[in-house]
Amino acid sequence: MIKLIIFITGLIALFCLGFGAPYAIGLISSIVLIIDNGLANFPTHTVAQKIVNSGNSFVLLAIPFFLLAGELMNTGSITRKIFKFCNTLVGWIPGGLGHANILASIIFAGMSGSAVADAAGLGTIEIRAMEDQGFDTDFSAGITAASSTIGPIIPPSIPMVVFGVSASGVAISKLLIAGIVPGLLMGITLSIMVIFMSLKRKYPRSSFPKWSELWHDFKDAFFPLLTPTILIGGMLSGIFTPTEAAVVSVVYAFMLTVVVYREISLSDLYKIIIRVARDSACVLFIIVSSALYGYLLVRAQIPQTLIDVMLGLTTNKYIILLLINVLLLIVGCFMDANAAILILTPALMPLILKVGIDPVHFGLMMVLNLMIGLLTPPVGMCLYAVSKVAHISLERVIRGTAPFYLPLFITLILVTFIPALSTWLPNLLLK
Image (cartoon, rainbow, N blue to C red):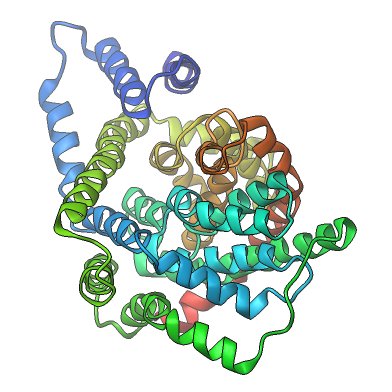
């Protein structure tokens, strides 16, 4: 019981005090090791072994490459071309640019796999365009933040890769493909809310496009639009693995931005690589520190304790899923998504398997929960990113985002209680 309090309460306390995720995780792990072995016999060899082995993974190479592809695609005119095509395609629906905002996030999701990259990159263009057309800033910021959470659901998805690493035995290709249907469902529910709010507030919309205009904007955005097709098609056909898909996406993004459009110089490329290296190091630092934490968690038999407690309350898997949802929504308010996945997956997977829940379904549900956490203070990174690009206070971003919690929660409930939304497509396409 003492260890359980240290593992859970201690970690939450450190997060509340402002400790960064890897430092908080490492400190708690060290405290547990000192309790077990004493300070004089601190097992430095165990710490070194767990950290080195957890970072020595071919799958983890996908993370820096997906981040680099997203950064390259987010530079220059590519985001503008995508947004302009999306506006031409769906701008005539009530709420016009609000739907273009959502569709652009769905398309950009197939390039970066990062919600914050979507919010910061596309957000600048989207919010300015919506303000120019007469949308109020709070609404523009709110739909930009909400739609950015689609990014890590539709492949490629960095959190899905992280889940696949921490839940050994689950095919990452299945996890990535599992996000397609739920990601599209998120877009549909958000669009319904945009229509409702736009009709009520009388927001503008553009006229129905002419075929010539639609064809022109499609041709202009054609090469960026090919990116998701190449990645998903390559993984489905077995031409390359998810990690190799990340490398392909970087090569393709480089060809577009440096060779075809010639919008990135070598000096710009150097700065992008340095920025991506820093972001990748942050993610990988969390991963290697969480590996030690997960090892100690299992050694202390906390997953088994959790199973006994949960099954003592109920054996109904849907009630268990509901309880896990509540837990993840609370955790998402205070913890970085990748850290939460790495810490909670080893504790929850034995329970999930015990009650017969598909790990792919659970992985998708977990990531979707934690993406909603990106919209909830105090940690909500997408709120801070949109606040910065919209030049408004955090309070106004939260107020603008609040109506979009409803469609996201509806999507979460559907994904939780209809497993086929997650498992049907990967089971159909990947045998």
